[in-house]
Length: 380
Image (cartoon, rainbow, N blue to C red; front, side, top):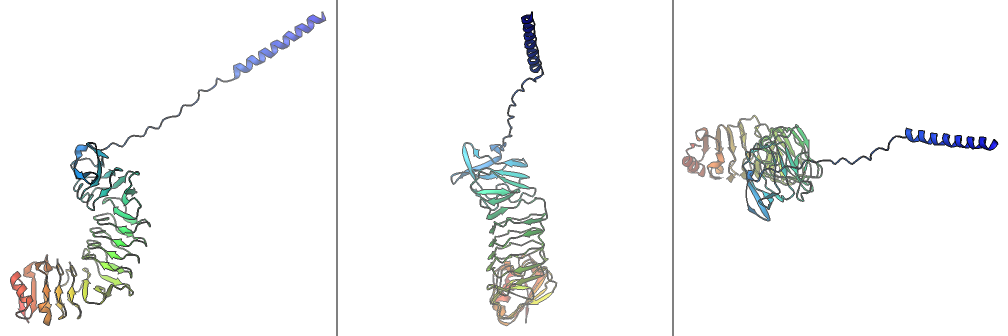
């Protein structure tokens, strides 16, 4: 009897254990399927059709000579007809209604005027794998970001600070950028090249004491009212400060070895050349200082308030376009100045000949020039 009871208890214990295990198995959730990685699909960059580009054989590949498409957002193909695109020629995109343009890694050469004449351009993108060029915030640089090549004409913003890595502002870099009124040029920039800021609304600029050269037309067509030339500047090109008749004054650091200023007018350091008469000045008459030998190219460009300029006897040469784009002008040649060399009719380019009068010595070069060009001459 005792053995039966023990056996019954053993069987009950086994059943209880089995039941408990069964309950645990039922309560355990089914194992979740392992999560599969979701593949990120990156849309490929769609290159513009090859038919949109006229090309010619260039050095090491194809050169794009003209864009003939109508798209606003252009992606230059790396290959056209199986050949690498390596060069974008001058004026290749002139007149195109571009908003953005993407440059492939095959391009090695971009000309100064490749993206001129694109008033709606907002962004220039460069393939990061390109070994020669780069872009930051839609602005074109060389790979090292030491040269700024092109700021898009229609990029938003009135102010811009050039990166501190930049040492050269290239030809036409900011040309016709209609939204900009102020650009910060960092210390370290040495060259401001031809027409760098031409035809902008720039109304203030600080040229740092690291710049050694300011190219011709660099600030032409701007709205600057004053300019300070630091000691470092050694070369200034023609018409560098031919503003929109806004410039009132040019000052020069006294330690500059190449230039000086007097009463806000720019001269060579030795005062043998008058370089720039600010065209926003209000005077109607001006006498060039005695000792000046050369009236430089564009020296009085668009100084539209001037009606009388007196040339001293020391002047030997009046350069091309020296008095261009004035409304009306009487030139009074003192003594020997009447025999100064006048470099062709372009000296008075843009002034109607009936609005020009010469006053000087009879039988002089000035009289010969006046009679040849149909300019009124008054013998002194």
